[in-house]
Amino acid sequence: MRGKMWIFYSADNSKCLFSIWNQRCFYYAAVACLLFSPVRTDHACPSSCICAKDSGTVTCRDGEDTEVPADIPEWTSTLILKGKNISTLQRGAFMSNGTELQMMTLSLSHNGIQAIEPYAFLGLPRLHLLDLSHNQLEYISARAFHGLLELRSLYLNHSILPPATEQLSNALNTQSLCNLHRLELAGNTLKSIPLLRLDMHNLHALVLVNNSIESIGGGNLTMLYQQKRIRVYLALNPFWCNCELEAFYYWLKNSSQCPDAGRLLCSEPEAKRGFPVEMLREEDVDCMKENLEAVSYVFLGLVLALIGLVFLMVLYLNRGGIKRWLNNIRDACRDQMEVYHYRYEQDSDPRLANVAV
Image (cartoon, rainbow, N blue to C red):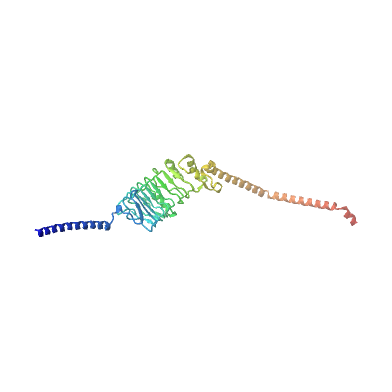
């Protein structure tokens, strides 16, 4: 019985040891799976980036990447890319595995971006703020901002190079940016306001500081008069303070839509250089007075020319009499000189005459 009992006990013990061993195997296998299995995209953080899931912020700075990171977490609400070598934003650059991101803020400043291809921001339907400042944009597709229906703020400060200035107006079209509230275009050497195709009904702020705007045309002023809520910032532009500035001058005087109106200075003509545009007199920009002055000067020139012509005609018609008159004057002068010569000889010193005798 003891042998049997021992055999029975040994069988139970072996079963227990076998079950413990199985549990440990499953445990180690699970740990190995966790360690070596691929990480889920929605919890990953791209390499060379810092992720803060609590705030939904992913920050990637100073890398040698030439493309946007492909493994952006789905929970990202704010993405900051700075100091990269991203020369081109390609189509769907921010779509992670073909899925849309719920990102609301995207900062792409100081990345050396030169071109934005069509549908570059596809997959960001909830984006509210896009910062593309301090890049070197030479090409902007007309559909570069397509799909950003919820975009509220667009920053393009110090980014637009001359080749892209004409393309900018087409990119800022109504279909893409129908809900845009703030547009910043400071420091881009723009010579006019690129608002031909932009829906200004929702635009609240337009920043055009430090450009090359000399005057604002009547068409743009008409739109500004119609949209009373918009505020336009125009400081540090070289305004040409002449007759062509008349409509803009009265807009500054009669409207409060330019908060920095006191900082607008004349660049030309030289006599008014550095003079505040707001402090100009109405005569300085009065086109009617300027035209009248020009007409008066022309009329004066014509009158003087006519007088000169009449004088020449009189001289020509009386050339014979004038010649006789000049000859008579010459003869009279000659006779008078002979008289003076004779008197001089008669009135010479009498002592010289006695000595001669």
